[in-house]
Amino acid sequence: MRAPSEWTRAHIISPFINGAQGFVVFLVIVVVQGQQGLRTLLEQEHMLYVILGVVGVILLASVVFVVTFFQWRVNLYRVTDSAVEQRRGLLFKQQRQARLDRLQAVDVVQPFLARIFGFAELSVEVAGGEKSGVQLKFLRLAHAEQLRNHIIHLASGTAEKPLAIDADDVGVDPVAELSPLSQSDKARAIAAQASPAREVYKVPVPRLLLSTVLTWRFILAILIPVVFVVALLVAGNATLEVVREVGIADDIAGAFTAIATAALAALGVTYSYLSRGFNFTAQVAADGIRLRHGMLDTRRQTVPPGRVQAIRLRQHLLWRRGDWWRVSINVAGYQDNQTAVSTLLPVGTRQEALEAVWLVLPDLGDPDPEGTFSAALSGKGEENDFTATPVRSAWFDPLQWRYRGTRATDRALLIRRGWLTREVFVVPHERTQSLGIRQGPLQRLLSLADVHVHSTNGPVRPVAQHMDVEDARELLEAQAERATLSRAVQTPDQWARIVGVPQGTL
Image (tube, rainbow, N blue to C red; front, side, top):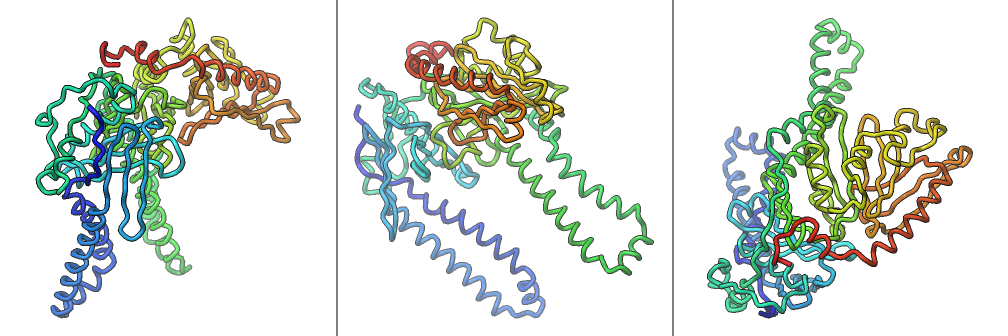
């Protein structure tokens, strides 16, 4: 089967979902900003103005939906054997091409409103500059998943293999009955089935909730306003009288508003973390690592082998009792949306954290991988052949210099640091982008230097700080050589065999 190549549109309901999203935001702003005026009009029974306002809102909504409809009419896409192409633009025309040989990941994303009606956005990410991917809004969920599998199938280089798929089994998009391009839609809907997957781990909701509570941002968001109010209550009326006499009541009110705003912001960040970790499941298949997560908005993410550039394992002090870890990654191709895709494990036990690392790096290239990671996660000094920072680095880092260290195995570079918050960076040799040494004037006096291992854009920024300058130079030269050699021999097929991809799916 060849890839469909005729230009087609997303589902006809797309303009209504897109328009509704923008209109709801506008309506919330109008209600919040104009509620006092509306209350005054109602109290004074100026119903004519109220009616005119309602009519104006209806007319504005109509304009929004009409404009969105015409934008949908000129928003076309097609999938060829070599690229996913998109044409769009009502006044200013734009054509974008996502080459399949540069494919990084294909995700199925469901914003809350689209999820209610069973629709999804297909996001095709490729290696390149900013906004180099393609987003198709919106398709039926089943259609989006089939199209994702089809694109990954084409990008794998196995498109010449016949695909035994019946169009009746893939849920042909209802646009087939409403659009003049219905026949091409039917052809395009015949896509590759998802390859078999094996579940590796799933994050329990109770653990996610408890880990959310056991974070400093959540504790501060709750504690600071409470302490402020309790302090005012304990101070009593006498202190309030002094406040009035001095004339700082407005300052106190302003401080309380600022504290409440900061607390709400912290709670917003906490909710974002909770939402991204909700129902988090990791699977492994022939096309890569499959992640599913989300509360109101859901994301089905597929990261092909070799796209993860660096890994970070992190443990907060409050998580130490349960020995919980968070695993974050840098993924090539996600220049615009790293926040949503940078989590490989939101919270898990040490064993689950190691399983998450094995998904990316199934072979550490070490005869004792468990012992090496144990020394990386909770060791210090030169345990398990780590290169430790010298005693004189305590002038810069008196609390955690003992916990800093580096070690290179046959497959990856490990960087360890942290006292209150423990962190371990893992960079596969072949994913090393570039290296650099930095040395400040005070470091120069003590013969110390930092080694920066440059990665793609993302939350993981591996740096080995305050190393002995000779150790730093040796690490720089050796890592550059290891990176060159590793890039020449590593292939995705090796990854698939080691992680245990079901036979016959490659």
